[in-house]
Length: 233
Image (cartoon, rainbow, N blue to C red; front, side):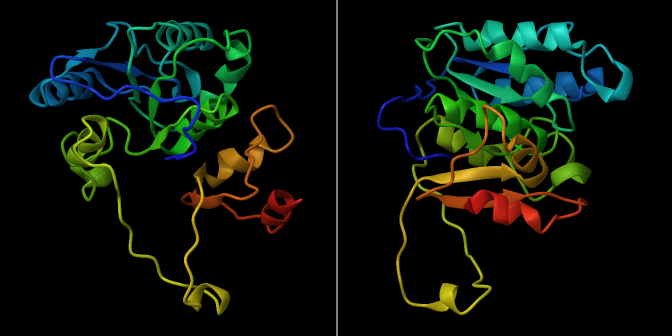
């Protein structure tokens, strides 16, 4: 999560609030949608899921580019929306960024939650100095599909959304001599999916990493050596 939120903040959830589900990338079968709906209800929140959110398209997209972009714009510009949580990753989110260019700078910040391909939306949020949460999508977790991500639970995200947890600790393993030094570093945390960040270089959503702590996640992708060099220029 980008902690550089001095100028803009999102609102924590209270019982009965809505969580708006978006599918900017891949879709999900209807039985998964119902499981997602029931999971959110169990936490005391109202799931907002359009009935036509998942109409399978070529390449696995949840719906047409036009539909996905318009739904995303609708929730991003609604002042009553607090949290936008992605249904699925995959690919397709970056195709929607051109549709978001005309959105007013004055719209209230919402917390975008997701990982993998949802990194494209985190990059967009960073251009507006919005905080965002790099976390599980609604279909890949212990509560919805254990084979997809059995070690991650919605409990962890919900604790953050309700302000029950304000810190997240990770045990890191140093990989070189410099990182083994006894020192403390502080700074905003930025990053996300390596492939999406690489493809953002040179675009309006190019991630700004100077003075920040960068993290990367990816799976089953080639890692071009030129990538890290490009980030340091």
